[in-house]
Length: 172
Image 1 (tube, helix red, strand yellow):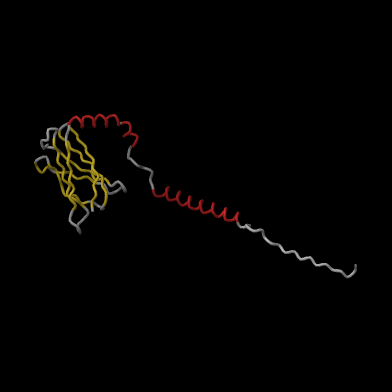
Image 2: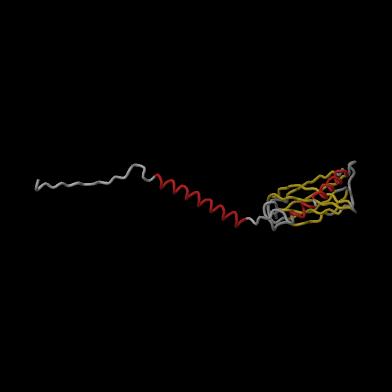
């Protein structure tokens, strides 16, 4: 038995599918990265404030309901018309509002104000008085900072009577 040499060669082959766990870990890594990016975006782009003085407004909600009931008993009818300014001019419109009592007669002598609120971004809101034009009509040409949707909050006052009306408009 002398002189016999045996050579053993070991070849190491990986099992098929050895990389599957790495795919699993990489998938979780992608999900984690996307979630972290979304969290960063949510924290740094939204102030969290939806309504100014929300607690105080909530406490005064019964007063709001009483005022809405009193307004309903008045039976006033409000018609609004928004005529966009010609193309090429500033963003704006001619706002015309007509107030009538429950019998359909024009209401005169009101102090009418329109608050323009941008529902999608803060910092562009404004208020404009609407002078009386006769026959229960009130209106003014209004120039706004941006085109798009605006919430118009109308307030009409005469003595102790306070009437409010909301309308969403689109300004080109």
